[in-house]
Image (cartoon, rainbow, N blue to C red; front, side, top):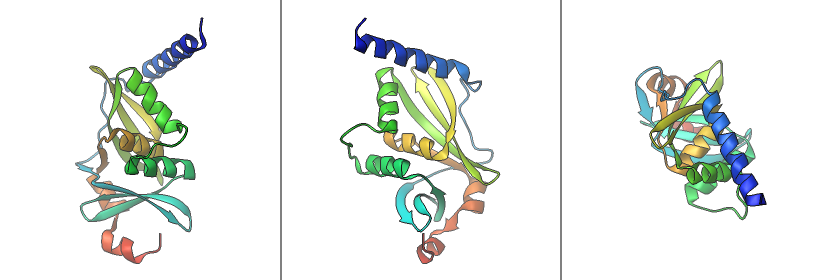
Length: 169
């Protein structure tokens, strides 16, 4: 067996294992209240580290991320290809090789932590994956898929854009 066929077999096995292990199979994630689609994503540096700004309806939700995810999101926003694939590039390539695509992601806030529910379609099969909000946002940006939040999250966690412009991120 060649190295390439072993890699393909391993990729198929891992993807199948992931697909079959999640109890949310076939259920698209929805926010708990009326959903709002994020209209703009921006990556900035702050005194606390990289932050992703999710904008909608004049409000901004800041989500702090690690440097690698910030670089991946910024590169996808700019249409840049890194010299070597990063984790999100690899995940995208594997999904696309097997006919998968990110349909949407839903960002929620529980106990002070942001969560992502990444919805992926493989043909007519839909699968929702629990993920870190940063990974979910990165893959949505890579696939140009909608990012959704609940209206109550946007109103409670989101700062007004005027306030965001006055504060030092």
